[in-house]
Structure formats: structure tokens, C-alpha cells
Figure 1 (cartoon, rainbow, N blue to C red):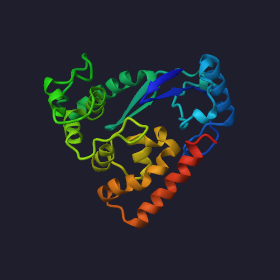
Figure 2 (cartoon, rainbow, N blue to C red):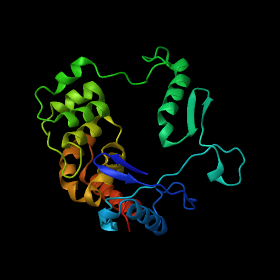
Figure 3 (cartoon, rainbow, N blue to C red):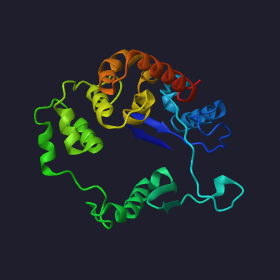
Length: 250
């Protein structure tokens, strides 16, 4: 599958047993990389793809519900929800059914949350209100960038970013510098890899995992996160090791 995503192309997938420590971020093997590159070259021969065209890699662990099959790859891709005295756990499923899983999770949570502003029989996400367009009236952002911000942050946060002081894009990515500040303030960043791999996806989309951008990133996020210089150096070191081990094509 070749899927347009955030200005890049995701290409995959593979399905192999993961034999390492489950607490360690998984990484692509050389045989998987060769397999995928062969597929790319076969489907898009005119592009003459090479490994130098790969920005980054990522791997994940597929959760499956155990029904007793000896081969995990033969297990169902259905999802299941467990309710343990108010702790809801969702497992199984797959990326293409994420919306159904989210709806089922909301249904299960509704009895604990009281009124929830959605109808289980209608789409989870309503269309943007008419006022959404006005949020960017004073902005220089193009319509595609405005739509991405609205879809990503909703109307309130999109307004915050639109009025921010840094509307310039981070080179080679669809992200604004101001999004780093927003993520640091409001999105539960504990470590630098939270920010760069799971909030603003610079670790996957920027060359060299965004390591070359860290001086500029530091100036924005270190004050927001309240890290002293010693903490920043530790986070920088940990992220560098993690990216080179699990996200760089070696």
C-alpha cells in the first residue's frame, strides 16, 4: 500500500514476529527494507526509487485478540473492549477500522461520563461550523493549511495557532513552528520523543529525524516544558539514540 500522508508517502506493510523486548520501540529489519524497496520499484519503475529516498521508517506491534490459534497472523482482526470497574481497554482491530473502534469506545464510556455531546448513531465528527473560516481571516495561511489545522486541532486551538507569531512552515514538512508551542503547552509532552514522534511528527517527516532542527526547537519548547539545561541535554541524547535505533533506515 502506498498512502499519501502529511506531504510524504507511507509504503508498507510487512508482518513478521517481534522477538525483542516489548518495551523497546520495534524497528524495521534489513530484509523487510529490501522487500519493501523491491515492491516500490516494481510498482513505480519510472521513479527509480532508492534507499536514499527514504526519510524514515517505523514499525509497530499489532495487537490481536487471542482465540487460541497457534499462528498469530491467522487470528481475527476484530477488536474487543474490556470494562474493568470503569477502566476501559480496547485491543485488537486495525488501522482501517480506527473510526469504528473509537465509536465503540465512546459508547462504552458514555455510561460513566453522563452526557456526551454526540449521538452514537451519527458521525462522531460534525462538519466545521460556518465561523471556522473566519478564524483565519487575519492569517496568511493557504486554504489547505487552514483545513489541516482545523482538522487537527479543532476551532479553538486553530484560532490560537492562526493568531500565533510563527506562521512559517518548518522546512520540508506541513507543520508550523507554532504547533510545537501548542503541543508543548497542551498535549501532555513528557519526553522529547513524545513531541517529535507522536505530537508533531517531525521525527518521521523531517530529514535526519529533525535532529538538525533541535536548536530552533529548543528555543520554542524548552521554556514551555519547564526543562532546565541538564534535562534538555538528557532528552536530546535519549531522542538521538532512539531515532537512530528505531526510525532511521540503517
